[in-house]
Length: 133
Image (cartoon, rainbow, N blue to C red; front, side, top):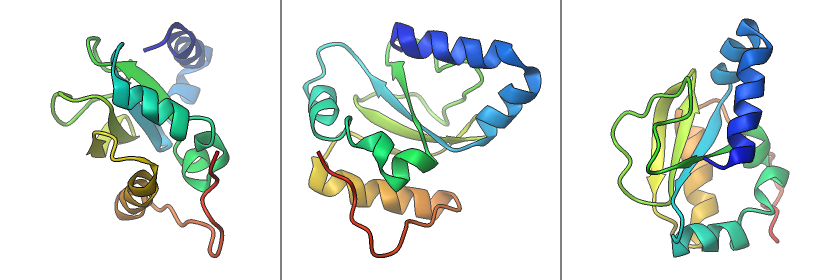
């Protein structure tokens, strides 16, 4: 997990116990990565800047985690993460589903949208295209 994400999560969790439960109840997408991962770098370049601007990114904000560290505090994976990047959909602190690997931007968006539709109450805005870089 980057130092910034770790500090932001720690500050959020210390702010209020009620906030902790509320924050972890909301869907989030944990991107498990590691230094030197070329597919993580591709995702950062192709998807990263646009992600928070999309319906998907607003619905499930991104939290980064390092493969070699434990899951972020308050989060439980259903099974060990072996590949980077792995995108883990979290709700109520528990893994709901995951995408292992990065198949490129043309496949990532439909996979993510389907994942959110199948495992949450996500309903993408009809008739709008995904924001791209």
